[in-house]
Image 1: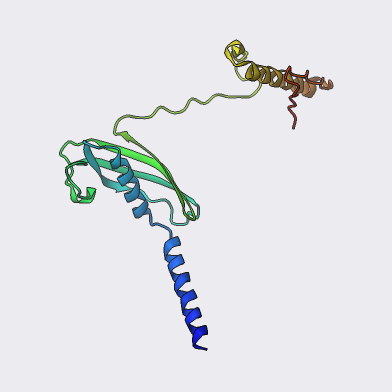
Image 2: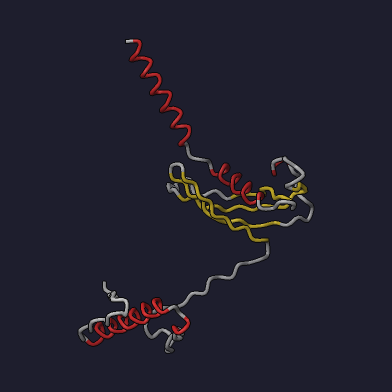
Length: 192
């Protein structure tokens, strides 16, 4: 009976340790880790401290947590001080940066994607291109496939022909011709 109790207590202890090891990080802990990661790349330069952070909505139930915070340059240098950024006063007129990114956590795997751009340095909006047929009235520019390696060029040209044939099938009700064999003996098929 005593052996059973010992085994039960041991299992309960292991479960408790596993639960603590698997606990999720708070948003503040994630931002602190992100800031530490950012500052590690600044050897010999001033480190940054947290000005403000914008946590995600509390109902966000995801393995990917969006990050959004602002940092400011401090008076501390990375190689001189072992102090935490919170212990370093902000530098008067110091550079400020807006940081965005994502933190992904699944069991023991943790990934951080972070981009901190200086204040006032706006990132241009990504150029959006309309991709519908006849949207601009112009044909898209042709790719010069002569600079591609032969195997890639052959694959590109067969895919291009297959796509054009599929478009023709959709428009004219014509059957799709078979793709020619490549010199290597493999064939390419593009289908639904």
